[in-house]
Length: 412
Image (cartoon, rainbow, N blue to C red; front, side):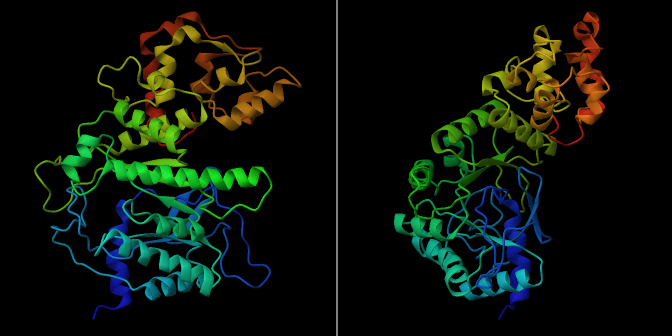
């Protein structure tokens, strides 16, 4: 019989392909009363995710089992895959979670599973782990559960009772691609379950707004994942699908996972992985949609291929295509206009607005405001700076940004 350590090695490795793992937005719970175990405070751990405020979150990220009835071509754990299989019992996952927490390795659990027997049976096993942690062991750390779209509504509701976040992976940006690569999966069932989750989340939010005690349901919301580069979908198509998901289901996050070639892969799949920087550019574009007021059409306009440039970030690419909007007077511009300046992040814009109420902003202030001056100066007017008109018209302006723009980061 396989021991737990070997199971963990197999099932933690099998879980690494799921990117839809984050713990931002949870409600605060502590154990200072001595009646609970775990907390949502920052710590060190096994699998790291990052909250929007920069906190590092540590999670035990595993599959209940990597056995699966489905034969999704892009998945290393598909039914026809020649991989070593393993399966935890519910009690084994509970014990691992508690043991790792007590050793200060983790502060929460991300649990997914291959589909075994049926969607309902699999979902019941996943929910049982969360139920035991919460009710029997009073675990108050973070729990993220992967939801099975075809599972019974009562099981989904129970999952939301115990989990901080639920996720359902849409996998592919286009319905035709999902039908081609994962014929057992039904995009309508996925979206139907997303819709039901939104209704339950809305009910809880409405109860909080009216100051009545809401039914607890996944306070950190729902998320999903799309695989990038397994099919021919353009960045434009991917971002339009994301915008639709955010609007229709109020998702907290869409995660983008660059396709990774797998052993014994189908000939329908590409032989090589897409460049990882493509995944990063999609995250940056997603950030522009959610926090900077950009529409999808603006982000990809002027690109006949529908693809984001890889050598510069999408906000800088937009600014270079719309040079007529610059230079922008930092001391007079609106918040919405400032958010579109290359090098200006949201916090920097808030600092600018607070500072200019007291005094005019000068070039020397940029460092204090944490703004990269070399990136921003060609696009802005300050009380002691105005860029040359010829600079914005210069064809080689983009080149001066490329060496630093390829460094990964969200400091737009």
